[in-house]
Each structure stands twice: as structure tokens, then as C-alpha cells.
Length: 223
Image (cartoon, rainbow, N blue to C red; front, side):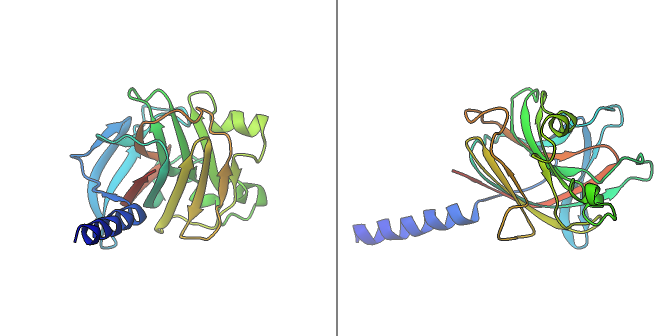
């Protein structure tokens, strides 16, 4: 009997590890960091709407809805995202939306991977090559990484505005991989997360200028 109970317990733990922990995206368990947010229903799916505070004019800043009472270091983050351009979006807006992770207590340090949905089907190849982006706050924003290591921290993936896109980010040590829409192979691989392997912290639902962002179906699996 004892062995049977242990067997059932192992099956339960194994099932939890595979599925991960589902996180309800409500105003009660999210804290806005230089963003506005509200719960909505979009295409029959419950979601949280997030827009950047227009007072924040710089790119790649701490602009996200931070998940409360959560510490993350290594593991997998999965979430459905959908972005639209706001009516007053500037010409360089791209529908920026993604996930910040290992966010420090005061939001002054974090890693982030986001997508640019308008670039995914652009008619210019260079823009298509910049559909996916990694940056590290505060010292390694996209412009510095692009200047010092062109093409190393951004890549192409098929995507578009106003459509649900499934993001899965696998993080371990100094490595991160982004998978889009349940693809078998990653669209982006980062081998040297700039904050190093010994950091842990919160997770944030990230948007940037000109984006009306929606997030749903968040699951997190810690390793």
C-alpha cells in the first residue's frame, strides 16, 4: 500500500511539472509598473490589457504588469499575446509585446524577450530579421546590442498584429530560448543572458510604445 501511494504521488508531481502552474491574470495579482492595465474579454478569451504609460518616452524601459508574489529563476514561461497599434502610435511602433523575467525587487534589473508583430510579414527583409528581440535592462538595450553584436540578439519569426501568438520561453542559467506558436525549434537562442545565471526575480508582461497589448493563459514551470 505504501509503495502504491508513493507511485500515485510521483504521477501527480510529474503531471504538475509537465503542465506547470497556471497564473490568473487579474488586477489582484498584478502590479502595474509604468503601464496601465485592465481585465477584458477578447475573442471569447479572458485577458489583461496592458498599455505603456505615455509619460515614459524611452525604449526598453521597465514597462510591464508585474506578477505578484512570484520568484522565478530557471524554468519555462508560456503565455498567449496579442498586440494592436494604438491610434496615436508613432511611426516606429511595431506592436512590441513580450515577457520580462528575473525582475529585481525594485524593477531596476531584468531580462526581456519581446516580439515586433508588424515586422513578421514586412516587405523589407531587414525588418523581418528583427521580428524577435532580446534585451537586458538597464545596460543592454536593443540599440546597443544591435550596434555591438548585429543580428545576435534578434531574429525572424512569422507573426502579425491582431492575432493570438503563443510564446514559450525556456530559461536555464545564462541561456534562454523562445518558441513561437508551439514550434518544434526556437526562433531565438540567447546563450549569454547579461545579468548572469545567479539572478532570480519576478515575471512581467511587457509592452512598449504604441502597443495595445493583451495577455492570456499564462503558465509557469520552475525548475
